[in-house]
Image (cartoon, rainbow, N blue to C red; front, side, top):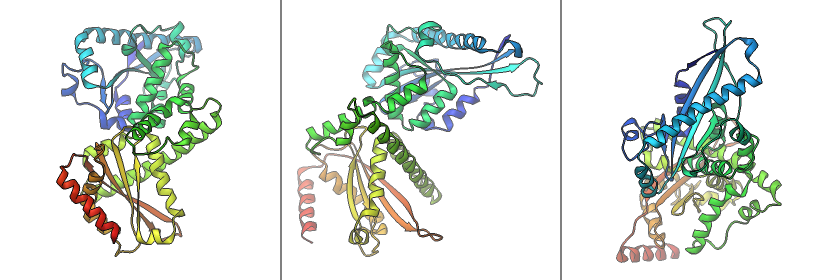
Length: 420
């Protein structure tokens, strides 16, 4: 048996086909002395940094030697190579730099090892493709075959197989949800908790209170600032130990709505691009960085349009939503009027969107928001059916403090508008 390392294109393909491509740091930043150096890929999210090393190996062996015991030995070999390499890289980087980086950046740091194992039979033709080995690890593998160094939780290498990690990022379609799962996975490892495999652990996470804790924490901040009255009851119910069935059904709804959001969002990006007015990178990054629960709530507002009365549809209407991922992000959703003469018609809102966001900023001064979005929602009849199509607009502005005189002007304007 001999070993050959395959082309790294497998990993580049994984990155380019997922949201990770938006957050990959260029080479000039990965060699910055303030970063851990020597890792294959580095991704920086709003609240986390992921250092990724990969091991893509093709084993050559006769058909007679390929059995479960042999595959297990190969998996040990592949993972041990990653563990050794990570240990060397981590020690090579100055410890004081590591501590300074994690504290000053205020970001969680994760070290991820990805493996891909394929077998080329010795009697295969030269042009034959390797046979990919599907596998996962689970806690028992790391307890018995490849022991991870769990003394320092922050430096633990979290190992996944290629196909398993692809499935994880396809289900956790946002940086914030991926980070939350990595934190959950790392806590299971360092807590010596038993789990069958990573897919089972992912399912457990999606249906566990851990998934909803971020949304609850944001709502607690909103309550403290008197922006909402209470935490959503379904969030609290989903975290109760005896509500596993409810939590599973809620997650199925969240994932369904998330898929719908991305269909609308991708159309939005495409339409702006084709119109020669591509959305700036900053608001795109922020929207992609949201949580699946936020997406689900935005889509719920869109789906509720069909239950609105005809007057609301004719004149247009406005509703508000907040981020369930971070405090300080607000969404003004404007459902465009069917009446072209309404102040909430699509054309008029698109023309006055900057003024609307300035008014929203004036309203959100206690406390000031970090990010403000205006999401325009337009329902158009399909030409070839009785159905309707949904189109989105997205406008963005950073929140900012305004002076007292400007605040009074906006308050007076709001009073006048209320009298009309």
